[in-house]
Amino acid sequence: MTRYGMVIDLKRCYGCYACAMACKAKNRTPPGVFWARVLKGETGKYPTVVRQALPVLCMHCDDPSCQTVCPTGATQTAPGGIVVVEKEKCIGCSYCKMACPYGARYMVEEWESYFPDGAPRSTYEEYVKKEWEEKSGIGVSTKCDFCMERLPEGRLPACVNACPANARTFGDLDDPLSEISMLIKKGRGAVLQPELGNDPKVYYLPPR
Amino acid sequence: MAVGIVKSRVERQVQEEWKGLVAIYLFLGGLGAGAYFVAGTAALLGEGWAHVTTAGLYLSFPVVCIGMLFLLAHLGKPMRAFLSASKLGSSWISRGVVILTIFIVLSFIHFIGVISPGSIEFPAAGVILAMLFALFTMLYTGALLSGSKGYPFWNTAALPVLFMISGLLTGLFLTIIGMAAIDSSLIGAEQLRVMAGVGGTLAVIELLVIFFFLHSATRVRNSRESAKRMMGKGSFIFGDLILGLIVPAIILFVMYFGMAEADAATMTNAALVASVLGLIGGFLLRYAILSTGMATSLDMAGFQFRPIAKLDFERAPIGKLPPE
Image (cartoon, rainbow over all chains, first blue to last red; front, side, top):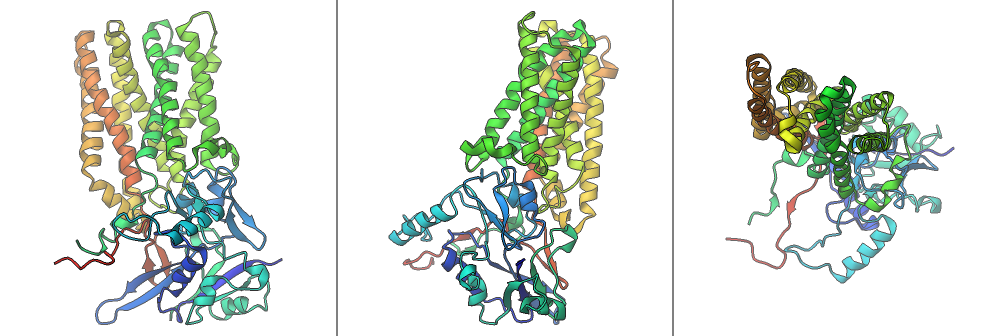
């Protein structure tokens, strides 16, 4: 059975935010919502300081704590192991956001304009807002879904497509011969916060 | 006007989803359940404690119901709240909904039995069952937070215990206020002395649990910053620890040990001062815990990355000249 996952090679990622922008463009998320984000971290002391980018998204855990705490069953695991939110069932309690150790959840209370000084939404924003309300909803929890509607067409998630350094690889974790499985095996792939026991399906190859 | 990130990096890591409304809900839930526990204990003690029972029952279930209204107001989709008991096996919100519903029904039946004698006979077994659900309610308000894996400061078994002790203490304070409000002439000095002894002891236990909670939090890297922020909050140190716990504990112990000869009116006034301070402290405790919750850091290859809870940018003034 297919179990979708992703590998992010931190040696290749240079923190250009192309993934974050591609996700925004594809999913048309409201201001302040970043299903794909890039965190920056530093280590060492002058003059041997190293800066590193860490792209994060929903880890689509095998044992997702967001799904465990969801009181209505709105958070579910779809075929392929993709964790999704059924917006009609979500009550907007934010418990999933509190339970997710990866900060992958977003609550959208209001679709504000991208323009400053309280400017009204533009015609395009009104169109996008309507689309957002139909797909994800207002007042409910939202998150990355691995661009799951593209997968049956054989297309990759938008962040994977957009990465100029080819740092992201998407595929089937259950296929031992898939590129993603080989990369995890050969490149010492590791997950974030393994001690929490969520079993994320997004792996990282170490930066050095 | 400066353009860019306006809040400090640490400030932006503090969660902003669960604050005022949830703090009020957690406070009122524990408060109402605590008041019922006091009323139930008084009911089991006999007729001599009838005034305590009446005061506790008058206040407990309405307070919990008002608390639930605050929870509903917090929800993004309150009209779907009926779905929230669907995952009893794993979600503390689902369990809480069931616990609260059973508690409200039982305490309401008890209340009706007390205000119209002869209409409903609420047996002692029912009182004990309702008291058990009152305890579950108090524990649940803490368990709700301790189930949050993303916030290591809350992800501890100490919180349900702390919220239960605090619920019992604030419930006792609310009952004292209720007794004075209903009919202060019915308050007995000896009853108040016993309640003061119990309240003082609970305040000391709560102080110890808070110390243990914060001490253990400072020993864990991911919750250390939250613990430091909580200990640096004036509203917590002065509002909860000093005015909400230490001062009431001193008043209550003075009442218990040093006012044996005092009349009921003097004792009532002293107890009311302690109760009002204690109630304010109980709310500030929950608010401080909620408002200092910080997301866990993400560690990879020796780097620590902190997710930002909410992006807060001053947007660039498009089409305008930059400020002088």
